[in-house]
Length: 135
Length: 382
Image (cartoon, rainbow over the protein chains, first blue to last red):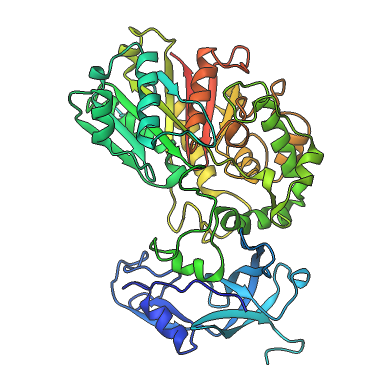
């Protein structure tokens, strides 16, 4: 199991990591105009409202891009697949793919959310949708 | 009358230290040496400088550099944002200062021990920077990985392989091989050497696709065109300079525009630059391109309109960017071949080409484009 670097939440993203601890992927949504913003921002870029709420992501996404992330000084450690996703809600999100071999990753691959615990740290991760639909 | 910064400032002095992997002295000393060289090259003395600027990640304190140089009084200061993307932003700030009268002679510097000291290519320290929570826990910890998510999309869209990127590196190293100031002086490579270098992010970047880590300093002096005519060097006019950031953009994690196969900021910067300078892409004789990684050359050649989307591969393969080509790129060797002084050394090369003083001089160069992605300038003869 890879060791991961824990996030250091601040006032603008604490909601997200509190959600992750409860195994929910929360997206920030403007309470006035409904625009989603990921990464979050303290003010809505569309209407300048300060009020916001969270939307729990459905967990479905497609692979927009990916890389095999090899640690620069730990060449023998297994690479992690870092992925740039288009979440079904319409925002981009960086995460990792699990339960898949590197050579099976492709653009547009349908994936689903799963929470994985790396020691003390829980992370939202994604795995391929099983043939026949989500588990 | 519409105000414009076209032709409102000139580069009159350039200076640099040697480029190495271990300078053996402080970053402040490198800054002082490069700055003094630039001031002397301009035919000025430190007492003539009344404005100073650099950009983020430079550890040299402005007042300590001022003191080292013996500048008695400075009244204009600028420190640009954006890391390497701010290299050309410093010029925008200097132009604004001299064009407005806020300063007469502005010193711009960049100096660091980026190999023997803090290395940008190594993983980001945890918990140091706002905004990294979205990336660092997921393993996106080095610039090579961060940019590769974008490059992967570009490669797929147009069917490029890593070997295509290697063709740029071969050219950059060929140019560096005849530049005595370059770290890779007299060390050209073949495409096979490139393909034999180790993967950094497979199958996107190999070691020889990555810019160097370098120790060194560079500096420029910028003043008004009127003052430039009284100084010893051939004046190099800043015909136009632009710096285009777009909403939802990011200088490294630029993942939030719709289509990552095109460099949106670059297209916008190009449009503004040609309009501002009155110089077209077809009038550019030589180009320097900020290339932290080789694929960004391809995306900028397309963004600045030298070829259509997806055609940079053939443009480079067909030899256009060599010294004898239709559009020589990075005749000094660029950040891969000469040194990585955070892109500011690429501005100095543009100046030398217009002066006619470059070691790999492009005959008759009248217009140079210095492209740094979203920030760029056209240099021309004064």
